[in-house]
Image (cartoon, rainbow, N blue to C red; front, side):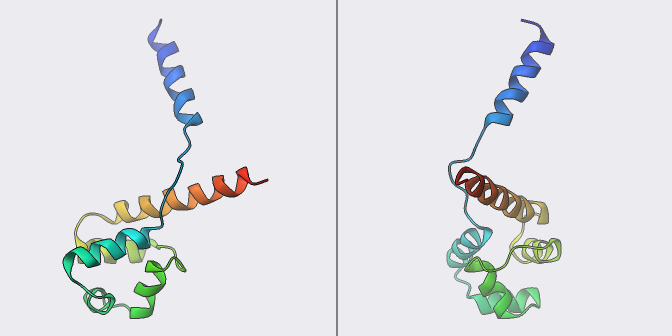
Length: 102
């Protein structure tokens, strides 16, 4: 088998890959706050953002923007890219879930 053929097979397999389930970033955020012993108000104060924003993210009513992802990274450590990846994975999973219902 040639390297070119192997690369093609790998790409084909990856394109067929479907997540069975993904979760909104707010679930991860809720768990992270709990592990740190922080409240939503604590995080909002650290980020300089309204408590309502934090709450809406946690309950899944609001997605993450790059600005919010950067604020979460600054407050919790890690990177904004991590938070945006969680958001993107979740949104793409929702799309695929909706597509499969058609």
